[in-house]
Image (cartoon, rainbow, N blue to C red; front, side, top):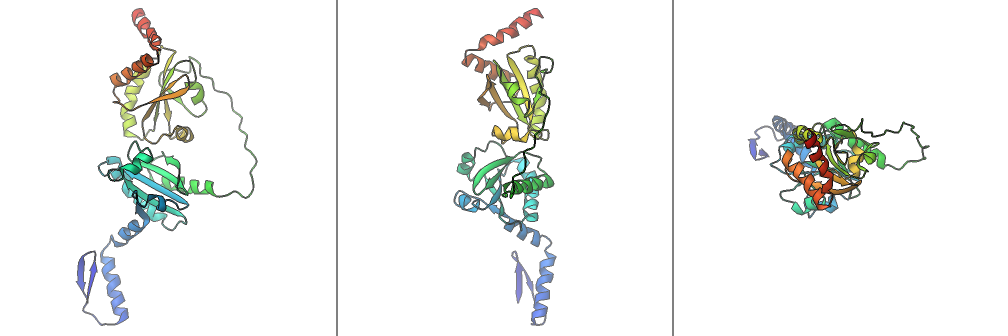
Length: 301
């Protein structure tokens, strides 16, 4: 008699009694310290493809990680995602899935995956939300539990909660370099007769950290031009706002003209490229006269 565990064989030479055989079996499995972890992870996470995606996420709740094998951030997140799936494996109606975008390109195009990793929350097969919080186990678990709680039918309608607060006004004094917007100030910040270039990011995002000094320099460049605003949004503090604008990757840079979203910038994130993009957009819409302020300021200096 020989027991094989993942290709490795062990000969059994003991008594042929069920108790002895069972003890031998358990002993050999225990020697493979990763066995239970590997089995649990395999069961906990479903590898999704174009062929099985629709069927698999038709369950009540699905949390799906879109990734690429070469992506450094994905490599860091994967073991955390696996541990999360193992911890919640017995949660009714919940599945965890992964999509390799280097193989399942059509799926990733369908869900407009712009960066890796991207985590999307599905309910009954419908894309409901993108997770944009910290990629930490407890944070993601709390997010899932909250989403499932929100989806449950409420027996009685709770009375509306009315919160009174003072209106925040964006004046020239408060609209200094590198304006930080939130859900309350966003509409007022971008809705004016001019251009607003908005950086949607997160403090933990390394690409955002790299962009920060460049963005600050760009804000300083236009600080004296009342028709051009360089703004930013912290999506960890203003999650609902970022969801409303479909933000799924950081940083996402969107140019607003007269309060309307016009162009998402996908070019290089160096100062010259960002500046030239702004100039080209103003020229395209016939608003390049707004740049005359820059020349006037330079002449005064």
